[in-house]
Image 1 (cartoon, rainbow, N blue to C red):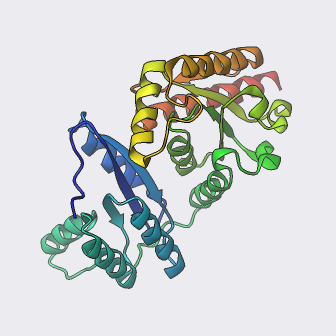
Image 2: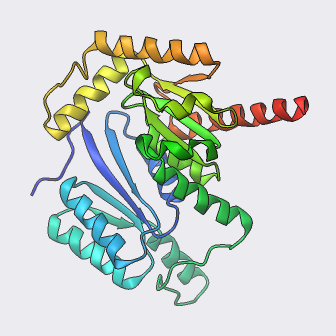
Amino acid sequence: MNRKASAGSYFHVHLVSDTTGEGLRQLLDKALLFFPGHQPLVHQHVLVRAPAEMKAVLERLEEEPGLVLHAISNPEQRQRLEHFCREQGLPCLGVLDPLVEMLSAYLNTHEKLVKSPRPALDEHYFARMRALDYAMMHDDGQNADTLDEADIILIGLSRTSKTPTSIYLANQGYRTANIPFISVESLPKELFRLKEPLIVGLVATTRALSGLRRNRLDDIGAEDVRNYAERRAIASEVAALKKLCARHGWPVIDVTRRAVEETAAMIINMLERKRATELEKG
């Protein structure tokens, strides 16, 4: 079975972790800097601890096979994942293994990855867990009735990395919702009544979005429906979202050629400035 990606093509990468998976994503992003001609479709599977959660991961791998990077410590869960990948012909790497083996040799111990490392159970940890739960529950426009609980709301065109950015921000402790922008009418009415959350529009250049969408359609074998990848239609979407954001005073970020971490850092700075301004006003 040929699972290799061709130059310039999209390929699936699955990050599987029994914690928040932040380290896996950072490691992948650094490694991908050496392969600028390839485009990953990154799937993050976080807090994978129960057998049912691993079952869901394996089902997703079967649907969208690709490279697997994991930080699973439980021996049974590791064995199940790695055995599945061998059967499916998928490359699978436990990224902590080489480091743990090196430390074990240097420290003259025999430590192995036999259980999940116990995180520091401080308030920051629990805030991150709550934020991650919130991001998952408010991905792609879900549960609009509780948008008022968000710290950050992202409104983005298709293929502007809304979900990865939301997850990254959640890993920093910010409750983040993301909403796809198709038209002004498609947005939840609750959005326009909010005062507390920072609302940010995510756009990209027409050329970049057209290429991303065409590759996505090719990857999933779908037809080009409703001018999804047509440049004129995309230009109208970009203009409409920018106009909406200008009308409401919402900042806009062009994510073209920006890493998720860079976009997230800009958003965090915007939120801190917003909060500082509100504090000064009393």
